Structure formats: C-alpha cells, structure tokens
Amino acid sequence: MISDEERNRIILRRTLCAVAWICALFTAVLAAPLTGLGPDDLRRRAWLLLGHAVLLAASGVGLWKPRLWGWPVALAATLASLGYVTFHLLGRNWQAAWVDALFPLTAIVVFLRTRGFLDRGPRQG
Image (cartoon, rainbow, N blue to C red; front, side):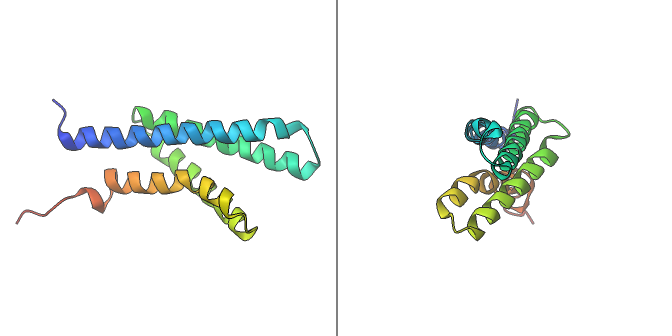
C-alpha cells in the first residue's frame, strides 16, 4: 500500500513530466521550421531551441518512472530554461519570458515539495 505522501510525490512528479513534455513539444514545433531558413544566427538559435526541447523531453521521460538520471536532466532543462528567460528579459520580450519561465517555476516547486524542506511537515517533539 502506498502512503498518501508517496502518492502525492508521484502526482507532483508526473505533473512536472506533463509540463516538460508540453514545453518540449511547443519548443520543437516553433524551432523545427526555422532550422533550415533565414540567416545563420536564426538557424543557430533554432538548433539551440531543438536541443532545449530534447532536454525537456528527456527530463519528462526520466521523471515519469523515477530514474537515477531524471532529476539531473530536469535540473539541466531548468537551467537552460532560465537562460532563455534571461535572454528574453534582456531583450525586453516579456511575453516570451513568461512562457519560458513555466517549466523552471514548476520544476522548482515540485522539487521543493518532493525533496526539500516544504515536504517535511510539522516536527514531532
């Protein structure tokens, strides 16, 4: 029998997986058509976005059923997403920054709820 706490961890982890897969799909759909078009700078950014989509998808796969490499890949995807958020904020593209911030914010909350101090509950004395 699975405890309520463990079931909640599974639900949160799988929610993060779903968010990662949605973000990966969205990123890949936007980046794939641009890989062969336009100037070199645009193609380079498109290939970087496709790499980011692969990281997001891999983090979803790694966290669906807990694998040893799941959280490190999710951390790499989170850091890459935060890099894109910073890039968009420096370019004053606030709308894109909010979209790119979806995965890192979700990942941080899920990590803290499943592994961090937010999950410990009240202390018994």
